[in-house]
Length: 246
Image (cartoon, rainbow, N blue to C red; front, side, top):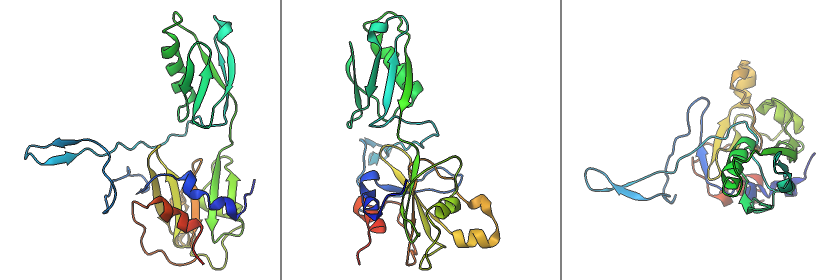
């Protein structure tokens, strides 16, 4: 499904987080430019000066994480009176008999199953619970900037950056092939950014550098050179990439 440029302007909503630089095989590294707030409690080191405990960053795995709009079938084989089919609400909660509101967004099916077993153990003896995902939003990626057809596309199978650009109609003549931006959310609080030199990649035939997309990834092909991207980018700054001022 293709969505017009107006939907691309909503990119700041999809990425309501700071951005963290990341590389091929290495782990994300926190680089703290001026103005980025510290999130955690301070503790004293041996010298007595305060030490800031940095937020823990977790990479997203390939397991599907529940999100608003998903439809779940929660079954109790031995206590069927608790069986329900529920929809994840916009705030990430579902409402279950005997339990009430329960937050599920961001969890995988196995994680939710374990959490429900723990919660229902307060009212049932050794509850047996199965969770089936009946309907969900299909995995997608977003392509913006100097591509022929910017928009939101279904992510089908193993797709690389160059393949994603082709799906979006290819580069425009005004595209900066050597500085394609890949944005990736890596946790609920952090997103990462990477600059890809697609021009060099294709000329050298080294397709091992052709990054594989994950659900929710966002590509931006700039018109002008981007000499440097800061590891942390304010949300309005990310939106500026996809909706530049005239």
